[in-house]
Length: 481
Image (cartoon, rainbow, N blue to C red; front, side, top):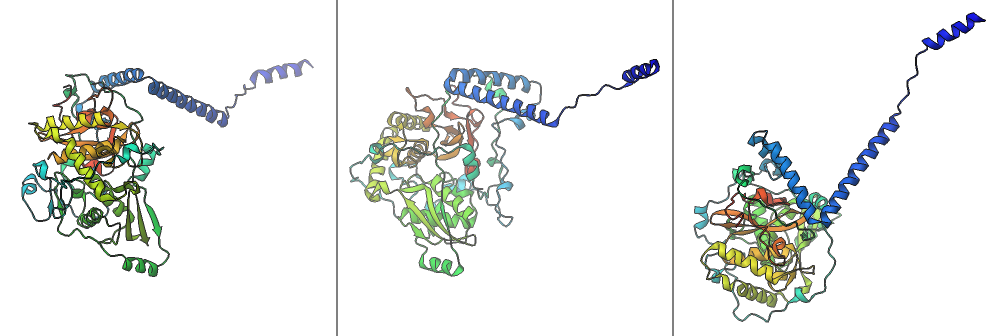
């Protein structure tokens, strides 16, 4: 009996302690709770920042200080490569096919040469008809009485386009530019040490609407042939060309797309809605070209930049139907009112001595005139030139058009602004390019936080679509003035 008790004690002593098993489910569950906790914390911080702009500035200053401390311990080249403001665009990644050959944007010397069929903007603003055929443009002296259609329309709820939706809708540009100018490099941080820049944080002022086409897929080749044969080419735009100084998006296209661009522009200008593409094209190429036309030509204000119809057969577009704004009614008197109002708005700028003074004049007059408010025409320049209510698209297109009438190259730039799809401008002053956002500067009183900024400090603005190929803005001349 005593022996058994001794053996039992010995076995109990020698028996290894059982290890507690950790279930994989418990690990995964704990990990999930940790991730959810982090997400909820971030949401809470974002909510607090949105309600309190001062807190946003504090957080921004902390992040900037941390970033500067990190940059001080590594080479400048590493800082540039990791900067969130670097766009480092690779044109080769935006090729449609290897068959497209590179073509260069005409040089300044070539742009100065007069050529038959060239659509240009003369320095004399009185004779300028930006973006219209030289054989058809006529500035009507007896303009019809201005009808503020946009200002009197009821405000409508507009769908907000999130950054995720914008990325999903992104169309690959048909880029044929291979020079280094297509890459936007960040300015060295040493250039920013001489001033402190704290822009006002702007939310809920980004409402640019992208194209949302209706694609009708035809069931048979026979039906496709019937529809194609029933639609003529309309205006071909043969003989037209577009100066690279004022129409950059045209000059980003390959030759076939340029032919289609000329046709779409000519038919829209002639108020022809339906026609057959002059060259064979697919859905992606066609949408890219239509965007290029609308980005270059704010004066085509009747063209609905959010919608068109394409008849498609086996991946090929056989017919195109443009959409015009119904609320404009008769476009001819609307055109007259648009031109008359545009001339009146820039009347006080014509006598100013410098491009900078003219630019500031246009910036200020739009900020004084306009209210940020949705309406059925808010994606058109008409809503800002004739009307008084618009969104970022109207601000940017109006600024583009008025500046070009004054002979100053100015482009529409589309991308992400405060995490929503947004439109602003890139303009050329004294040979340098700058970002201008009239929408965000339209406060009470008018501010200049987003006026003539280089890319490196154009906070909460990220170029998208073909706009990544606009000239780099890297000059600090106007910052802090």
